[in-house]
Structures are given as structure tokens and as C-alpha cells.
Amino acid sequence: MIEESPELVPDEINQGYLMKDLRYSNKLKVYQRRILVKGTTYTIKPSCCMPYMTGLTDEVEKALYFRQFNVPYEALAYGFGHDAFVKVLFRNTVRTLSFSW
Figure 1 (tube, rainbow, N blue to C red):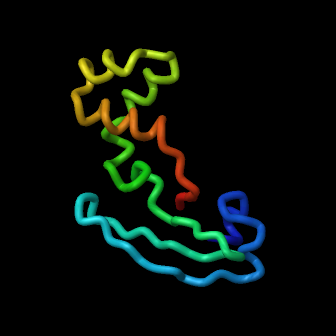
Figure 2 (cartoon, rainbow, N blue to C red):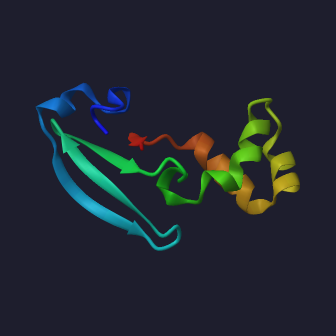
């Protein structure tokens, strides 16, 4: 992956990295890895997962599309249901230091 998509990884990764841990999401049934590169921890997770493994991107895809036009969160909750509203709100308020494959 490093050679195929160098833009997805930090430049320092070529100097080596350590596998910090491997975590399994019971909710989503997927693994995420954490690696240590020059003292910084990075999370590697599938791109189909929302931050903090709160759900799948397919579940909130349409709500995220409408959010780019500043559709209010209340309207998203009404149109897409409470779960989609919470996940879109969570995505827009929390930023993580991670990259996806």
C-alpha cells in the first residue's frame, strides 16, 4: 500500500513504523490497526467506516451530500432518521488523525 498510494501515508513511514495494536469492532465486524511512526500514532481503518467506528459511510452518504448545501441537522434527522443525524453530526464535529485504505 505504501508504494501504491504514498499520498495516504506520512512521509516518515519509509524510515519504519511499529504495529501498536489491532482492534476489532463488534458493531461493524471489521479490524482497525494502529501504527506508531516517529512518536505519532496513526489509525488505519477501512474507508467504509465512520470515525470512531460509529457506522458505515453508506448509512450516511445521502445525509452528508445534503450537508454540503448547509441543510440543517434537524432536517437531516427528519429526512434520514435519528441514527443518520447523529452520525453526520458526529462526523462534522470530531476530527481524527487517521488514514484509510
